[in-house]
Image (tube, rainbow, N blue to C red; front, side, top):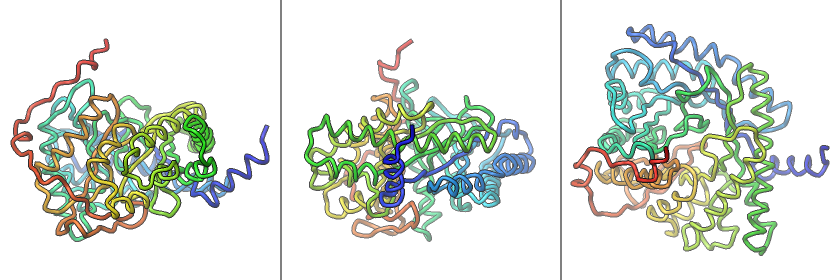
Length: 452
């Protein structure tokens, strides 16, 4: 039975605590768009996306109005583009990126994901050519997002791909230097990438997915933060229960929206991603949840333990509220998109090393971190290798989305606007790893990957 208090509580969450549906994302298979003529393939891609997702934005708006639930973004993810097509050159792939961008503009969505490749065990020719095209593709499009999976627990780490991505990130930063190197904010390097993730920049439509699905990514750091504050000085067992119950309520709303969107669009329901995705808005911060537990500042001693409790409780509470949970599902810690993280970096409480430690117990990884524009390629590769190894060793998803802000250094900041926010440039360890990265080859899979 519907409880009046529950209704009023949900209204308060939306009105005062920044509760929203962060994204409705439609996944679309593009396998039937394949061909050897790039112009024909581009036309097929544009036509299929715009036809299949024709009503995505209007449906999201209708649900938002009818239920009073804010739905911030409507997005599309597609089959990894390196898997679509024939013997394409990097220039051909740029044409495909522009076709994706045109489709995104036509639909009125804010991002389209899937311009990427899966190279955890090695490169196909198409994957290598697509990766080479990423800097040009991201600098000449507005709404295209790119991801490359360079490692998995089963396959180990493709260090040649890691080395290549350091170069790609630097080139992308340079080509978008007139706009705060924003191209790098649309590029993420993964280990153990989930194939049903609705969040950007890492969303793509996985190879085992149905022809078309609709998935939802929920949010609600402000709701959890308020619940933690109301809990007062209870012990950790009680605190975990409070967070679990709060996550259940947040995810239940996501399940409602996902089910309704699936029905109205006439496509299968994929998953609910129950991640706590922060924004730069005051009161919508994962860092503030951790500080509400008793930390003086996010990044101080105790931060990793607090984050581990939060992430576990969110998963336990959320998984009971949805018939299908997937994607990343946990607490995000992007620096530029979280007001509390930004403040913690500014006051010196939060370092790159502490962020890396925190990623061992939460979702995603080193996310939306601005670093000096003159950071050498090998250092960027080292950052990627360190973070990816955490994912491989712990059988979890980790990722790196760093922005070497061209022409800027420690003490400066970058401003992206909107949900991407702004970030101070973080300092890095000054010691190099050039010879280590130059070894190339493959770091073998860990022994615990042998589970057959």
